Image 1 (tube, rainbow, N blue to C red):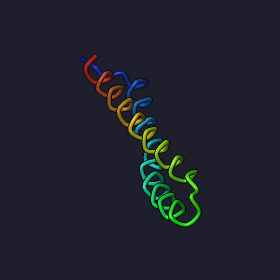
Image 2 (image 1 turned 45 degrees about the vertical axis):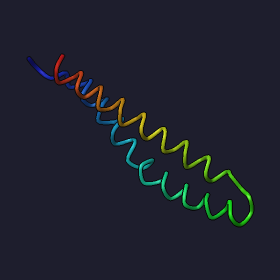
Image 3 (image 1 turned 60 degrees about the vertical axis):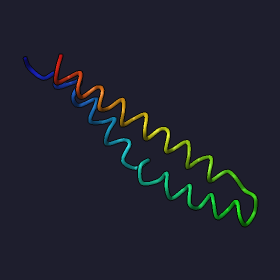
Length: 72
C-alpha cells in the first residue's frame, strides 16, 4: 500500500489554498456587519460569507483528496 504522491500534493494545495480564506472570511464578515449598521451596505458581508463557504469547500475537498491518496 503506497501513497499516491501526485494526489497527496493536490490535496495539500487545496488545504493550503483555504488558509487565506479562513483568515479573510471573519474579517470581511466583521467589516460587513459594521457597514450594515453604518450605511446599509451588504457587499462586505456577502463577500465574507462567500469566502467562508469556499474555505469550507476547499478544506473538505482537500481532506477527501488526501485520504484518497493515503488509502487507495
